[in-house]
Length: 242
Image 1: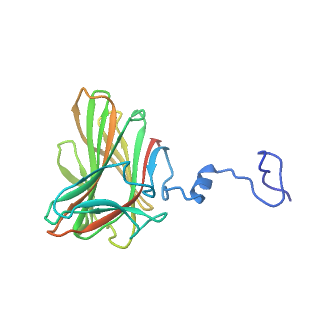
Image 2: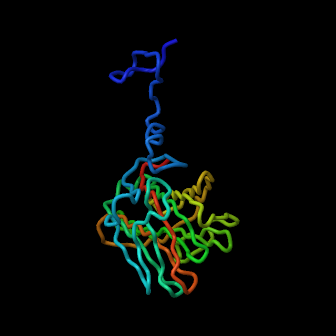
């Protein structure tokens, strides 16, 4: 029985290969950076294979640094290595800023990371949209098996409790879905294949006259007085999330 289509058409059957009907699956098989969730429309992504100049690097403290590294990689041969300063609360961050897509659609922020037990990892987001500034973020609370979020009162609160996060050498993938069309609602957090509904929680929102833009910060913060490193890889920014 014939099946599939020739390379030059979509409908004529052929005998030896199957027609590609799912382009998302094709992209995944061609080593796209997204893995556990391929929802949304990709606006920008970085697999940290080329250089780190797509990000603004901001190290704080003695010995702090951000650089591409071949020590670990989730995909390809490199990742970004973020090393904290040698005092507690020293941090090192990568910042990416760019024009914002229509924020009437939900946005997704995906990143994979290898966590160190003495380093806190955070995704922090500024979204300037429609005369409002939304300040959102999530961070690890590894000793207590929690994920915390930045709330409407400009404080960190529990987003998920009893939610273990792996540490070195295991990669963890987060995808945070936000809705900035109204009050800045957290919609969903996907950790690896674990899909958690976090709707009903909101980020900080204030008035602003700034032009529409989005800032994304990937931050490693020292929780001990020592230089320690985490690794991040495969950042994906999406919109039109369901």
